[in-house]
Image (tube, rainbow, N blue to C red; front, side):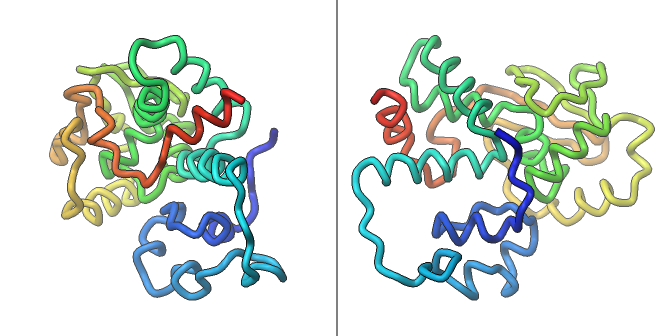
Length: 208
């Protein structure tokens, strides 16, 4: 399945929730969901009855869109989650949170996950001193994520770090702005993940 390349705000309106796909715009009055809080399309303002299957499908679609994944990628993570010890739904979210592009976003080195994915692909970051340009790279506890030396002079990266300086940092991460590096101090738990996702619905959907 190809990656969605249409308007990002349309996805938020379809899910009826902010997916924070466009950085600061999502917090401003320009947010499309704030201005038009109904689904896109000519029937967007109609009353739709959602059945059980529809609820499970919407939860999966919303989670995919939070992290910017295709169906095949998302299914791969679900299969990985089923093979790990613990609760499958929580395992799934922890795997998604520890993707390198998401960690870069959570560290405040990008304004959105899409921007973080692009920066990773352009090789602006290293993990434990080694260049990594794979957004899906899974970061482990103790790993150090740093802006590479030749990217630290980038005005864009400096501006993003400054803009995110006042935003709270997740407890499972720490960031040293002066050193341009962050660390995954511990694997996140479900309580650390602040996304409005009911992961048990995703598990039920794939179990059908």
